[in-house]
Amino acid sequence: MVHVALVEPEIAPNTGNIARLCAATGTRLHLIGRLGFRLDERSLRRAGLDYWEHVDWVRHADWDAFAAAINGRRLWLFTARRGTPYCRVRFRDEDCLVFGSESRGLPDSLLDRYNPYNLHIPMPAGKVRSLNLATAVGIGLYEALRQIHSW
Image (tube, rainbow, N blue to C red):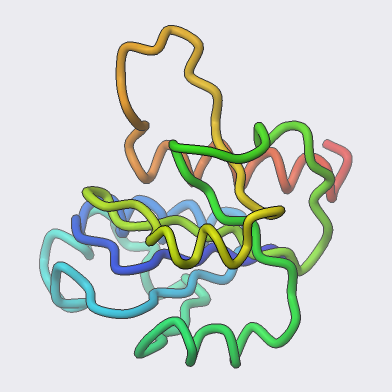
């Protein structure tokens, strides 16, 4: 099973869309730290449609609680600012793809700590600074699943 972790996501519809994606792919979703919405908020459920009850998800109070729970799995930190292109690494079963909040991304302290595991999604046109969070998760997750399952 692949894992997706969202660090302090801010926008309920993005998290709902990611939850739906996780339900569709059998991926565990980790929600870490302060959220920019309540988990029972109507927009979160609406974005996840009627799939929210099928999501395998875990709530973590902070990064340390998440790191303890993930227990030695490889963490791949996605960032728009640096790292290896996501399609140049070999994902394995039980890897965790980590994404930051919509407005701030991941903190530099985490990116520095996991520097060899920083990934980015190339945007060759250079006209935008980052992709929508749900889009980025979809791109990274499906590449990991393609590699693991040889689709």
